[in-house]
Image 1 (cartoon, one colour):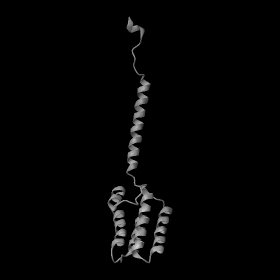
Image 2 (cartoon, rainbow, N blue to C red):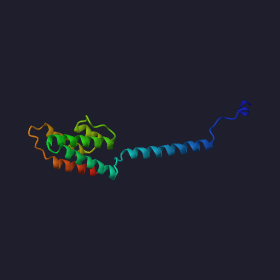
Image 3 (cartoon, rainbow, N blue to C red):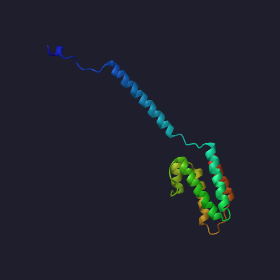
Image 4 (cartoon, helix red, strand yellow):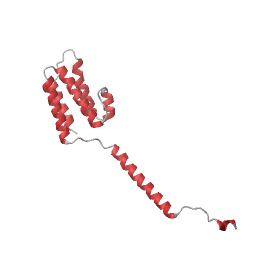
Length: 140
């Protein structure tokens, strides 16, 4: 007799359908967000030209001394990398930069730009390194 007084509890069918649909939508959204993490950032052509102009300006200001010009170019590339990846690269080593960016060519270029500042002769081909820096910025 007590069974007839209170109906047994069970979730309504509409509630189960809506919950299943929301779980499917959440799984699709999560998959899309994870796939967006693998997409590498891009700069607009205007920003690329701005950074290439910054490289030219650094060469014009410090072009007399190859050691100072190489350090100025390395700083410009670190600032550019910081803007592109959203990580401050001012105190990172080249290995850390490669780990963050996943681009060995960028880390190698920063390393090449910083080497002339420690060489006793200071006779580095800064013009070639500046062209390589502009090409690296333009590759994005």
